[in-house]
Length: 152
Image (cartoon, rainbow, N blue to C red; front, side, top):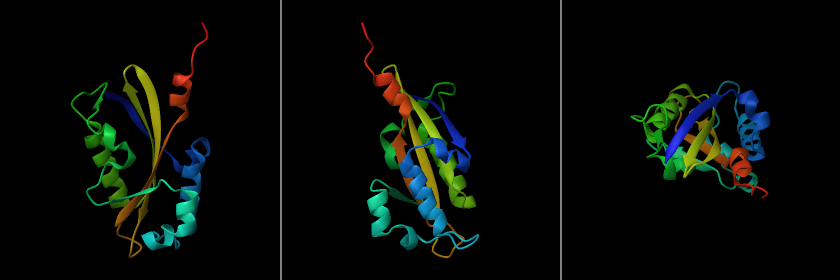
């Protein structure tokens, strides 16, 4: 299994992603207090769980989330780096900066490509120091295009 590339996108690119990512970002952004990050308890509510039921919370040192089955995948152009190593760098950056991160991660498995859209939203009990990241990952449209049957 290989991962083709991982690309970070600006938050305005959420308009082209899965609606669950948009809902999660808006819900998180509405609970921010100015420049202060919202605490988990402000975001992880029964209402949020109904809107985005498959959201995961990643604490310090957790780098997998929904992409856990693919952590051992090596990059096509730089085989020495696994997806886990690459995600570790990105999640550490989101934890240190407190800035939301939107990513597209493309995989190739048995010759088929598919893409995950991943949104990471930092939360903080004191408003500044990130304690957990909210992760919402969705399988993107590229997989659907590749899985359609072809006509004979």
